Length: 349
Length: 291
Image (cartoon, rainbow over all chains, first blue to last red; front, side, top):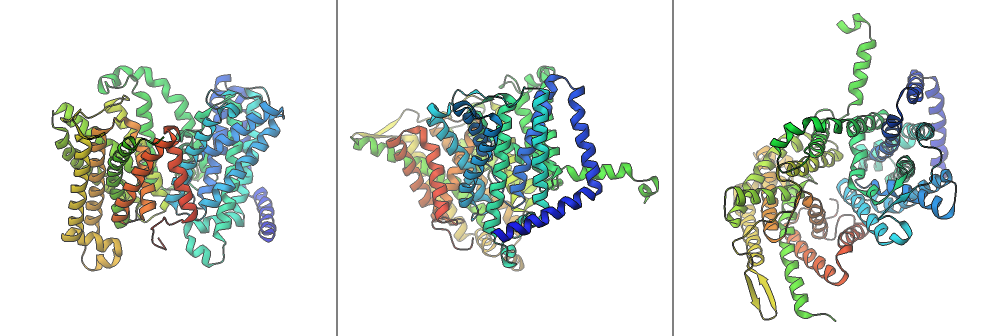
């Protein structure tokens, strides 16, 4: 175990050096600079309601993506989002621990429970794993409901804040996201990530070349649930409230949608997916009233056809991406970018 | 104090429940056995089947038990479409893609049902509503008895189809070795389409029966899928007799558990059992080694 750790730490160090010298580095710095100045031009609603969720869900989707890169598609990641959120909020409320430390402790608890669930999951085939993780999220919501006296999960409660809402909290979550996603990038690029991808491609062959598949799948599970817990803690902070709804299957399917639509197994995919899905979620309801007159005669049995129509569209979008663009939207954007920056002669060839 | 007649009543409901789960699990199992494909949206086909039967009884004024045939046919057609346009495209690629496609289908079906029929709870009205056959202290509704006998008829027909017909032979051959059966002249594509349509039709029949016995809403599909999975895990992947035994066991166990423990823990208990079984035996209780 310690040798693998030293090995992967060595390769991570190499990656940091490589990364800082690569062209990508400047691109990332430029994007981060743009994101950092965005709040100066955006309204308060946009900062708290759009940009901050995009950033937090980028962490969440990246954590799911890391697990999926080892071939394990979880359908119950909301369990860890919720555990992280509840643990950090409860610690701050009940024992007066500063919320920022609660955030870390909550992530650690999420990772510890992830370890337990992972022990069951690492031996399972893809579809059984999907079922077990989904089932775990149903069990955990039942437990939280039954122990409502302690958790306060049925009615929900206000979470103590790390820092003032709005722009300050935006920068805090931005810092967390930058560090977490960079760490996940390093992990995916290191030998660990290589092992994950090998297991994803063919578990039997990975085993044959000497990869301890069970151990690596478990490591992926623990890392992923840690960051999912972190995202949960931040999410509870961002809406300043936590309640049982955080365990909804909707929140389990969200990171899957984001990662798959953005680009599965890539580092930029979940981020792009998070931006797309949150933007759809926040801005498309705005056209509902305008469409009301058109939609109501078509679908007389529902009072507002907008939300189900949007969900249906999201499902179709997911299927279309998986069938026609299995690598997600990210490569398409990259292609467009390369096309734009290439010289006219290159374009002709 | 345990009341014997109430317990027998609970067991009867368990058998009826189990029958519906058997149809669903058998469909899922046939599709898995032949195509090595897991359709997580199978429960949504059940939900759509219930709504189609409902529409057939209300809009066309059909008898509820004839509407079962309509539901089977319509859901089979939907199944052919699913196979052709979604699952066929991802078959043989990454296993995760099947899960992603199923998830997309869950969203599509549930919201399509909301758009077409609204969010409210419905039930199919049967001509035998309210008729009870009483045997001493225990009584059983005609609908329940009819549902159980219909499931038995369907299972016998399925058995004959698989054992006595040419397409059944082709399906069994494909499930054993798809490449070898292709070399023997089996048209695999046709077998796949037929298999998916058959599995979907079974889900449609299950849905219509469910709609006659219970009430339903667009979000009905998720839990039956999971229960069908639990049954398959108990009975073994790809085994139809296993699904029958598993379905009966599960239905009875679930109803007696609700009888003794109360309904709040029902879903969590189903999952806890599933996880415990999988933790002990990752391939299922009667599952073959290696698959």
